[in-house]
Image (cartoon, rainbow, N blue to C red):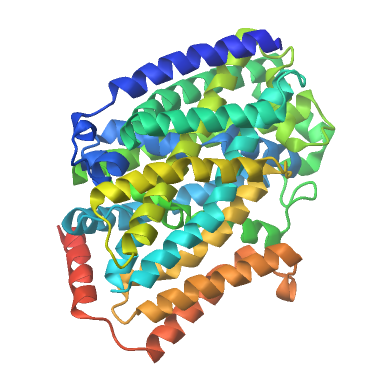
Length: 491
C-alpha cells in the first residue's frame, strides 16, 4: 500500500481525534485548584456508554488484531480458547467493580495502589504496588508501540519503518494525555472503539467472502494444516503452555491498574453496570473478528516467518480494497494509542500519588498533579526504548507482562475478603512474586516443567497467607475498609 495514502489517513484521524480530545476538556482542569481526581479520573463523572467504549478500547488494543490474530495464525484454535479465558475473567468486574467504586468514592482513592496502601494501613504497600506496576506495565505499553510499528512497516512494505511507527504512536499518546487527562483519553477512546470494531468486522467478513465463504475457509484450513482446528494445534500450544498463558490473563481486569482504575471513574453504580455490559458485548464480537483475521491470513498467506505480520500483510493484500485496508489500519493504530495513553496516565498517577505523594513533606494535590505531568514523557520514553528491541510475538509478550502484574492479585482479593490479611503479607507476596517472575523469565527456567504463569499465583498466595498469619492482625482502618466494600455488595 502506498505510504502517501497511509500518511494521509493517519493525518485525517489525528485531526478528528484531536478535535474530539479538545472538546472533552472540562472547566475543572482550568481551575488553579484542579485535583488528581479531575485529571486522572475525569472528576468521577464518566457516563456508562463512554466508559464502556473507553474500557473496550483500552483493553482490546493492538494485542487483538495484530497480537491475537498472529497467535491464531501460529497456534490455531487454541488462541481462541486463550482469549475466551480472559473474557470469562471479566466476570470478576461484576464482583469487584462495585467494591472498587464504593471505596474509591468513600475514601477518594485515585489509584488501585493507593487503595491497597489504605486497606493495609501501610505506605510501603502503596509504593510497592505502584513500582511493581511500573516494572511490568512499561513493557506492556511497549507491546502496543511495537504493534503500530509492525502494522505500518508491514502495510507500507517497509516505506514507513518500525521506528517511525513507534515514534508516531508515542507522540500521539502523549498529546492526548496532555490535552485533558483521562477525559480526552476516554472520549477519543470511545471514538476509536466504534471506528475499530465496525471497520474490522466489515473487512473481516469481506475477506472471508473473497476466500469463498466460511465453509470454504474452514475446509481450506483443514486441507492446509488440519492441526490448526484441533487442540493442541500445530505446535505452539501444549497444556502447560496454554495454562501458563491463560491463568494470569484470567485476572487481567484486577491485576492491570490501567483497567482497574477505570472502576473509580463512572458517575454511579448504574453507569458502572452499563460499562461492564457494553464491554462484554464489544469484547465478544472483537474476539471472534480477531481470530477470524488470523485464520484468514493463514489461508491467504501461509508460511509467514513472523506471525505478528499476519494482519498487516493481509490488509495490504489484494483481498482487501486499499481504502478499507487503510481504514482498519487507522482503527488498529487508534486502539494501540488508546492503550498506551491509558497506561501512561495510570503509571503517572501512581508515581505521583503513591511514590512522590508519600514523601515526608506530604506534597499538595497541586504538586502531585504537576509531578504526574512531568512523569508522563519519562514513561513514554521508557516504553519506546523497550519497543525498539523488536521482540517477537506480541501476544506472548503481553501475557508475560500480565504474569508479572498478577503478583498483586492475592493482596487485592485479600483486601476485600480476608480480614486477617496484613501489610507484611501484601509486601512479601508482591516483592517475592516479582523476583520469582523476573527470575523465571530471564533464565527461561521452568521448575517441574511448569512456566512462570502457572507458578505466580500459587506462590504469591502462599506468601501472602503465611506471612499474614505470622504478623499482627489488621487495624480498625482495615476493618472500616472491608465494611464499606461489603456494604456495596449488600446495596
